[in-house]
Amino acid sequence: MPALVLLGAQWGDEGKGKATDLLGGSVDYVVRYQGGNNAGHTVVVGDQKYALHLLPSGILTPECTPVIGNGVVVDPSVLLSELSGLNERGVDTSKLLISGNAHIITPYNVTVDKVTERFLGKRKIGTTGRGIGPTYADKINRVGIRVQDLYDESILTQKVEAALDVKNQILTKLYNRRAIAVEQVVEELLAYADKLAPYVADTVLVLNQALDDDKVVLFEGGQGTLLDIDHGTYPFVTSSNPTAGGACTGAGVGPTKISRVIGILKAYTTRVGAGPFPTELFDEDGEALRRIGGERGVTTGRDRRCGWFDAVIARYATRVNGLTDFFLTKLDVLTGWEQIPVCVAYEIDGRRVEELPYSQTDFHHAKPVYEMLPGWSEDISKAKSFSDLPKNAQAYVKALEDMSGAPISAIGVGPGRDETIEINSFI
View (cartoon, one colour):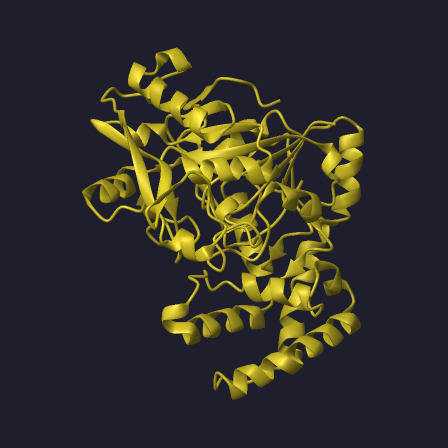
């Protein structure tokens, strides 16, 4: 029962879509297990570029069954729009499965997200405003709407009423907004029922039976380790668990069935939204990384903050996820630098710290301690094996591997599906 988890080992945007798509031809199921349409993957197939927001990257591989697990929050309008866009481009989406236990992002969740973020002003978290956080909050508060509720109008109405009892009080009395009508929300949600019905399934049963039948299942995390609600740079995090443990709860598969955990590392570091970022660059190097790397959020459209590689957070990701392998992406972006700084530790109040500090205060004050590695100027986009890389590029990869605590089993040398060096097979 080969079950693999593939997740971001930094703050997200590491290139998980490319890695998942690369494995797509070898796996039977690709499962999104958390997050919503606040995550984005760009996958390049030939001369075609696909921007995926909610759908698993396996949707682009005909032999693969893509699954949206119970841990995901689903905006029906976004999902149907994404499916329609792929169908228009000739992609078969009929094999998609959606957990009936996945929670629905309702119109009032989106409203609450946007007005709350504006209300916070300078203290805002930097959310995407797509209703993700409020939907997870409803889930925990036990007033959430699940996909299965779309097929029982009575239950749906009762649940919407319960959710709006409090939310309308907050919207009208705190934010001076108009109350939201229960009937309007119910009518809008029911309109999605027939369109989603062909995809809805007991995905927990499907996935466990697949593993029992020795099918290969790949669990794909959105965002990244440092955005995990429990293990990330709280409170500047997402509302779910992108770390490896989230695959078990978000898909309904026991931890004993997970055979490999692959962390995606960018050859430098980026993040979107507010929060601490020790290696962030505000100079021409940062702008060059942003420009060459095309660092703009697939879902948000926001420029990503850019900085040098941080081995401290890579080691942390290895530890909290139990990583067995790394997939290093965007190595080609670093071509042309004479020397490349790598953060090997932090300085905090005059102390050298080599592991991620658990204290939020310490992390906010962390200053990077850099080690300089020699760069390269040769084009590496055509490299097919590790030995094809320039010696300095090889040394850079080996240094990152030694610092990060897990073997680098694949290297991305360009955005295309075929621009990857595979050192060790993941399956």
